[in-house]
Amino acid sequence: MSLPGKTAVITGSNSGIGLGVARELAKAGANVVLNSFTDRDEDHALAAEISQETGTKARYIKADMSNGDECRALIEKAGACDILVNNAGIQHVAPIDQFPVEKWDAIVAINMNSAFHTMAAALPMMRRAGWGRIVNIASAHGLTASPFKAAYVAAKHGVVGMTKTVALETAQEPITCNAICPGYVLTPLVEAQIPDTMKEYNMSREDVIKNVMLERQPSKAFATVEQMGGTTVFLCSDAAAQITGTTISVDGGWTAL
Ligand code: NAD
Image: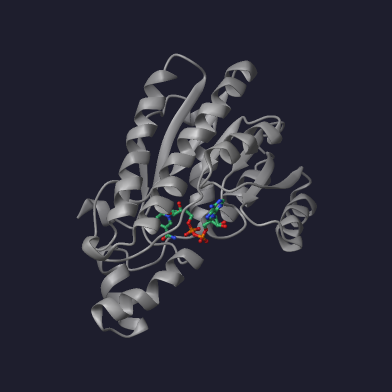
């Protein structure tokens, strides 16, 4: 219980890594704000379940991270934001000359621009509270590239750059800003890439997993959402108070290649 009394806002957290991060932060004692663009009973039920399991306060707030005003409104509605985890993200796989413009715009807006808006809105609250932690969920694709992912790679490199800039702007304050760069984690986002990649490479599902996805992950194992949550909790701990402006790869050795 290292984070009692802290409020954490996790964007895109009704599924996958965001939900895993929210659960680990709540287990560490933080009150959590879950988010996505939907407003379904099951979204609110996830928050209720986390509250029940951890005894912390958990809420779900609808906000579309493709819209800058809604990104800022999410932080305002949360009322407090000691810990900000920018996690919302989407993917689309296509060669650049066939990349749909609307997919490019959506990926850049959700995966990168949203972090600009939420950080701009959250920093004044962190300054008033005298403490803050920003954790941006980037990607191994924030440090390296793969074919057919131009928008995603551009957006994630942008997130890593923005992380360094915000770290420098807050370097003399009790606020840190870092990025986690996951390798492949088996979540709905990754699941959704399998059919397109099967088509692109004319491969079976098993071969896509082994020879395309985990081909570049030397551990040959998917990373887990719990590991992303644990790394986030570490970055929020006192031990990490002087860690800022950096990336932590949780990628089974991908970026060591
Ligand atoms: P996911 O599809 O399970 O989760 C994405 C989350 O973002 C969902 O909660 C979804 O509702 C939310 N989201 C999507 N569009 C949104 C919008 N417009 N407004 C608000 N929320 C929105 O995928 P995931 O794998 O858990 O991905 C989470 C993050 O981790 C993404 O930024 C992704 O790029 C990054 N990442 C994932 C992997 C991986 O292998 N899964 C690897 C590296 C980085």
